[in-house]
Image (cartoon, rainbow over all chains, first blue to last red; front, side):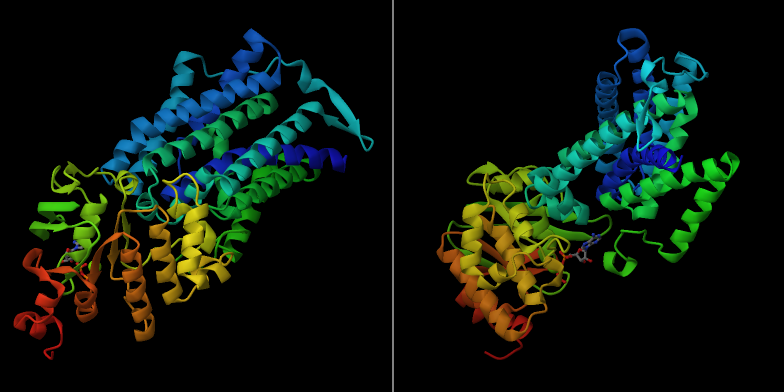
Amino acid sequence: MFVQQLITGLSVGSIYALMAVGYSLIYSLLNFTNFAHSASVLIGAYAGYYYITLVVDNPITAALCSLVLGAILAALIERITYQPLLDKGARRIYLLIAGLGISIIGENLIVVLIDGRFHAYKTALSSMPVSIFGASIGVIDLIILLASAVALLLVQFLIQKTKVGLAIRGAAFDLTTASIMGINVRRLILIVFIIAGSLAGLSGVFLGIKYTAYPTMGNLTNKAFISAVVGGLGSLPGAVVGALILGVLETMISAYVSSAMRNLFAYALLIVILLIRPWGLMGKSMEDKA
Amino acid sequence: MLHVQKLSYAYKKIQALTDVSFELRDGEIMSIIGANGAGKSTLMKCIAGVLKTQENAVQLDGRPLARRPHQVVQHGVVLVPEGRWIFPGLSVEENLEIGAYVVGSSKQGKERAFTMFPKLKDRRRQRAGTLSGGEQQMLAIARGLMSDPKIIMLDEPSLGLAPLIVNDIFSIIQQINREGVSVLLVEQNARKALNVADRACVLEQGRIVKQGTGSELASDESIISAYLGGKK
Ligand SMILES: Nc1ncnc2c1ncn2[C@@H]1O[C@H](COP(=O)(O)OP(=O)(O)OP(=O)(O)O)[C@@H](O)[C@H]1O
Ligand SMILES: [Mg+2]
């Protein structure tokens, strides 16, 4: 029972982590929270649903399809909305509001173009349990956990070991300084949105498999946002740790206390963490950032 | 040759530069001296593409210099900004690697940097933010050289450094120049700046009020009283 809950919690947490890393990446470069992130999650969830229903019941190719669409949507949003605002030197609050607008438009477009109902994925996998250490564990949880781990490790590799990753880490300190090093900052920002959008699209399909696809599911990005803050905004390992803690905590509380208490308990604990360490678990302390 | 022609720049309300014209010839050191707020940093940022100016105000070898910062670097003109702006969270070596972003490999550049600044070699794995002020300035210059520029612009490289280190910095500047890099140097330390310069300009309230060889300006009465502390 405990192992089963733990795996479920980790799988929920790993979905949050996919979204949280995207938040953190964009925040580290531009110092604002991309509320339009939920649009890529939504498109991922619905693309996955239609792919599995209409094309073929294969969660792997469905996930790839959602990943690509999430990335394309994020790139479009960046080019059409954020880039012009950044070029005009708009203050971050305007980007924040633009993002909020996009997320609401996305939600309503789904209601208008499709409908407002819940769409359960018709995949054979979701009901298939496997047995590990005597505990019966959903195959889907294992797939989500593994796929997320692979995606996150790839991103970590990209950031730490490649030239583009080095540019991103430098640009996170200061965009102008990065540009006078010869880095095309505009393109770098686009690349970061594409990475974040891919992860969001992927998280969408996983959320869809677990919880169904529905218009307001973008609200789940709140949890990712909170994970990123708890981990320390701008820190990628922090975002992952924060997300896993949140996922496991939520699952344990609904299993052992009550599912009605799930959000209450989880958020209360997070607020406590923030009161003690406002810069997050793995963020740099306030003075350090200066 | 870098040719600046009637360059003007205004921040929202402040006219920072008015009709600035000069040329930096290949292989020379040109110093720009001027009081605080004269517009020296603004001028360098305009050339580097960080601030937008008129289309043809800056020409490199007879052609308009690209107007976006990363393109300016690609064309062989690099800025070492006032206040250093090294990447504090990255290692010394990673700072150098970012400097080499526009060139294929950073290997040769790093070797050159470590020969020129042996201290940086010892500290290559250290976080750049933990270097001393002098070491950070060395790193900023070394990082600028990593893109293998034709022209390097140094904005107040001696700012806040002890006199001995200032001497080091000036001999490094001359060494860089001997290796064939043209230098545009902005300095508060006018005496030293004029000593190393082939030619120099004086910037006052956004205008160039005097141009000449380094030694001409160093012996000019009005400059002696305004910038060299009155004594020869
Ligand atoms: N971002 C800005 N917005 C508005 N005004 C500015 C800005 N940056 C500089 N200025 C103004 O433009 C003028 C020139 O500034 P600049 O930094 O180029 O001077 P400087 O010669 O480099 O001075 P210092 O020797 O102190 O570095 C000053 O009057 C300054 O107040
Ligand atoms: Mg200045």
